[in-house]
Amino acid sequence: MPLFHQTAHELHDLLVRKELSAEELNASVFDRIESVEDKVRAYITLTKENALERARAADRLIRDGEKILPLTGIPIAIKDNLCTDGILTTAGSKMLANFIPPYSATVVKRFEAAGSCMLGKANMDEFAMGSSTENSAFFTTRNPWDTERVPGGSSGGSAAAVSSGEAVCSIGSDTGGSIRLPASFCGVVGMKPTYGAVSRYGLIAFASSLDQIGPFTRDVTDCALMLNVMCGHDPLDSTSVKFKVPDYTTFLVDDVRGMKIGVPEEYMAEGIDQEVREVIERAMALMESLGASVEYTTLPHSEYALSTYYLIAPAEASSNLARYDGVRYGFRSEQAEDIIDMFMRTRSLGFGPEVKRRIMLGTYALSAGYYDAYYLKALKVRTLIKSDFDRAFEKYDLLMSPVSPTVAFRIGEKTEDPLQMYLSDVCTISINLAGIPSMSVPCGFARGMPVGLQLMGNHFDEGTLLRAAYTYEMNTDYHKNLPNI
Image (cartoon, rainbow, N blue to C red; front, side, top):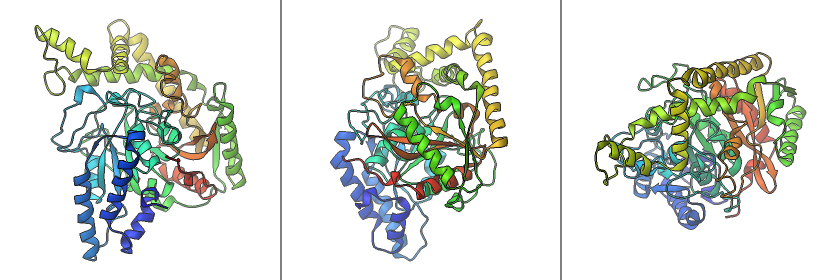
């Protein structure tokens, strides 16, 4: 198997045994990028010299007999809404098309400290608002399994890079499914950790009470290695939680005997593609055959999740994106008669249609006379949704479901119908509202495209998810399938 399709832990072993140099590895991935990037379009910015310089530093450590960390020398992609010191960071928007941050996000710094090599900044839906990466202000990323289809969003570039061999691992963010959906559509592993487990400092905000940073990898072992680096308290982030960070690789045990798994009926109801349902039912049967108890359960307030999410998230977006006014930083319209006209032109020209749509929704929900009727009521329903999960985890160790009602859809298929696009996230948004961890694991194919199995756990119980995912992975080969691109 070529280097660019191997896992981080396999490559680490080769580096330690000096059968491979970090510079060779990174050069191999850049060759792959040169070969397929025109078909996939995963990156907004490439940082080749930076990556190769860091790779040479890793090689010097190995030559000197130093013990290297598991991700030292490993090439990774970073979603373009994470600030990188001195490197263009656009959030997929014209508004930040020339923004070069003077600092790096905490997560970026942690991977630098771990010795990883940043390949570049991955394409995304503008300000992380979207489910297909068609909302990027620059170009649409394509699914490596079928370049006529979307890779999912908003972290589509991060997922497509790993799937196509243009990165070994990558970092994304998830506000309503933006890691799990692309992971499912592109046939890779993706995790949204517990809210507060990973620092959001340096993440360009969409909805601050929902955003969470997480990894994309080729297998569950690499996911655990990534979590070991990114999780942990950060005093720079007021929402970061102080907790004892375990070694997540200790949960990689091939055993689910005695584990109780609930399958929410609401996530397997009408609207789920029949082939997707059959793939998930086979996964349920496999887990049961491996010794887990699997049964249907209910999350009764799930039916309100979509409307709740599309009040809370746009309201927070309206507040967060008020800073882009042409005064402080970012794009400014030069053709303005006065300051009010400059504000209006800057925001009209700088933001794309989906961002404007969500700002207007959020501003309306927060406006006088509607705050109590919409936003306040949505917060109360959010509490009910979280309570559903709390009750479920009193009985079950984890929950499982499809990530998406469908496989990856065709480019342009849903752009004219925002509601249909929003329904792509119907199985994922409740998890963000509740703040619990969740991940997508490759579990089969429907209509020739990958399907992701969604695992959901209690707060800060990523370990149980990793154990279940690892067991599933050890007893299937779906994660070994590669797109023909």
